Length: 148
Image (tube, rainbow, N blue to C red; front, side, top):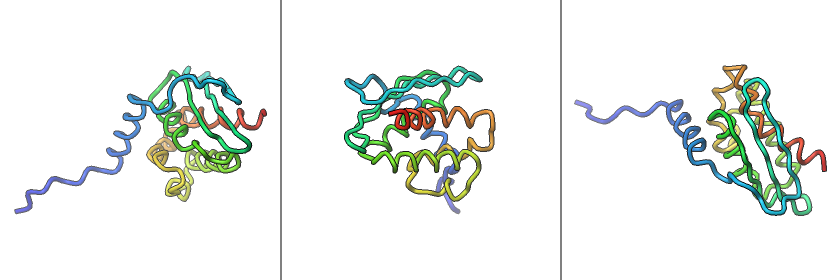
């Protein structure tokens, strides 16, 4: 008789990861002396992201955010800021493009290991109204680095 516990479903693990980033966000708070700062709001749901970056040359040395909103927008911001540390700006913009592709149902992007924990958000692509939530911090990143 097999008494082993059933394997948890991948979607359950992804939900737990999203909730962990929402409940215990990484890099949340103000950044002293940011070189780039952008505030964005999703008017459909009221999510807010204030993204602050410290860019040295062409490398993002630090990324922090202040935000309010749903678990998806806040977890996405938390995961994004972790991923951006010490990334060259062109690579950060490429990650933003991959994230956008994943949110629009690109299965290859959903398997792209360069997105790290963000792959947990791949299921959001099935809920069009939530895609803007997941992309809000990424849109802030793109606005911040392209406006400098």
